[in-house]
Every structure is written in structure tokens, then in C-alpha cells.
Length: 444
Image 1 (cartoon, helix red, strand yellow):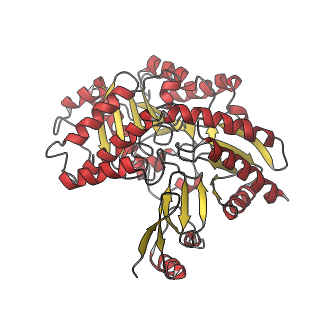
Image 2 (cartoon, one colour):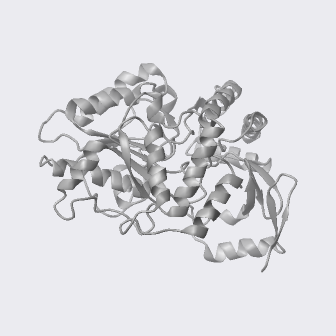
Image 3 (cartoon, helix red, strand yellow):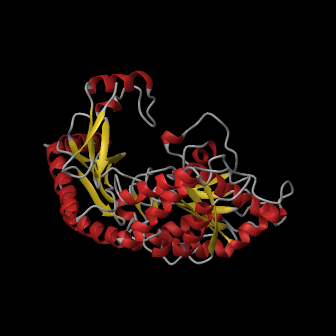
């Protein structure tokens, strides 16, 4: 079936689908949706196009998208699209295990100037899961190169670092369980308090004590790395107490453990700064980033490391380098898209906008705290969380919001609003009003 395209007043374009139900039926017959119960019908919402912070479905309905985990500069951004087309017309990609190409070098150089000082060497891969696998391999290999083998990893029990065997093995989240053995020893730190209590500074000592105990002092059993997310996304939309990364850096320094910060979700403005590590003035040994790097236009992830970690790989006994990568690692079009996305981020000061609009949204939503069905309201940059009393209530909130033209995300009992960073003041107000109205309907 052919579809023609026409422009819309909003500046987007719309697919004129002759039979929307045929599109949905095809999806139900052939598409296996990620992280979805087989009984769920994800084709009920089938999107056709987007512009700015809005998307349209195949029936012509418009939605304010506050579910966009990886959308930094929004939909149909002409600068990013132009960069992708121009790069594809010259060189769509070349295997970086064989040769270099300019977009990879330009992007790695650009990141070195934006990252915390000292993280000046970057490996590119295709996803956050791949990036995290590479980061753990780097950390364990580093100690092997020093002839002081360490393999244990310390992390949050509620961590989510990806969908690979290795990343799943770190987490205790039910959705991450798998029937295979763990590839390395893991010490998991339970949260010492409920998320609604953990976000305040008084919770910091108990959290640090839990990590200090997990790291230990036995010289024969020190961890290779401590790996953490600055915001526990899938693990419950958990905001950690201020200063946590800074104090965790000190614990790692005392034992030599490498600090690996998973900023797959928080980097590139989402947290209200270019990187969450910068909010605490911390330089990790390894930093993994992905989602916002290309704004979701093309898959790409970055694993950035300190020089001493990189240089240790000259001692690798097989090739004298990193034995990791994928044919499409550092894809040239993805690098071009990322460079264009970073241009937009810096030109329009989107991290600063995220911090300002996030604070405004938090102020607007704060009155919901203590309302029927609500346990907490919290935020981290342009990540807004309304924790409800049950996953069932959160699901009803999402349903009512979608019926009113607002797309939100659900993490257990928490409702999350994560709009594109280009959202304006009017759009942010619409998110707050829409979420508030959906909650009222859900508890009625």
C-alpha cells in the first residue's frame, strides 16, 4: 500500500494511510514488540510522524510526547536531517576496525571538550547495552593488565544497565532475570530507604554506608568497579541524594575501584546539565552515554575513559588493544547526527532549558504530593516523577493522559514525564495540566 505525504500547518508531514486498521493488523501479525506482554496490543497507538515535541498517529490524532527518553532536539529537526543526508551521500560508514573516518574523530574530539576533564578517549558502539558491556570489560581488563586481577562489580540492586546477559546479571529487577549463569561476581546494594525519602540530603550517609560495606576492605576481594546510574530510571524513577556521586568517587579512590557512571539516560541535557557527573563536579573513570547523543535519530553510544584506562590496553596479551566492537560501531551517519544534535544542544542551551523547565514543572506538580493516590513528586532536570500508590493506578493515569493527547511513561507505580528538551513553556504547562487532570480522572 502506498502512502502520499503532505505538509501540515505545524511544519510536520502526515502519511495519508488509506486503511489504518490494515496497518495495525500487519503489526499484530508480524512485529514482536520489545518489553511487552504478548497479550498487549501496542499497535493500538501507531505513530506516523512528529514535529518538535508532538507526534501524530495514523488516525490523525496529535499528542504531546512526554515519553521521549532519547529525544533531545525533538522530531523532524532540519539540521540533524540535513547532516545525516549529507554524510550518507559522501560515506555512509566504514568499519573502524579497518580504518578511520572523519565524523568519528570529530565527535570524539567534541565529546572530550564537553565531558568532565580527563575523559579524552571514546569508544563508539550502537546502544547503551553494548556500551555498558564494553565498560565492564574495560574495567576488569584494566586490572588484569596491571597484573592485579579483580573481577567483582558493585552496583545498585535496582540497577538497569541494558538487556545483554552481562548487564542483566547485575540487576535484581524481575524483568531482567534470565536463565543463564552470571558472567562475573556482583555485590548488589539495596536502597536504605524508600525513593520518596532517598532524594533528600539526610539519606546520603546511609546510602554511602551501604556502598562502603559492599566495597569492603579485604585486599584480596576489592571490586574492579563500582557502577551506578545517577538516576535510577527502570529501577523505580529514583532521585538520589545530592552529593552522592562525589562521595562515591571518594570511596572508589580509597580502594582503587574504578567508578563507572552509566549516563545512558541522563547525559546530553536531560539531567539539567550536559552530564550528571558535572552536577557533582565528578570525573568518573568510565562514562557511558547514549540516548540523547543523537537525539534518537540514529542508534549510537559512547564509552569515554580516562587516559590510564585506555593506555593499559597496550598490555593486552592478544592484540595489544581492546578486543571489542561491532561492524557498525561509530557509524558515520550516526556520528554526523550526533554532531548536529550537539550543535542544537549548545546553540539553544538545552541543558539550561531542561533545568529551568524541570524546576517549573516540579513546582507545578508539587501540589499533587499528598493528593489521593500520590506518594511523592520528585524531579531531576527534565525528568518529572509522580509516584502513585500502585502500578495499576499509574497505568490508569497513562490511559487517561493518552486519551487527552498526552503521552507519559510508567515505571512500576511511578508516572514519568520526559518531554523533548526543545519543549517550550506552553508545552511544559500542558504537561503539568494534563498529568494533573489524568490523575484526577484515574482516582475518581
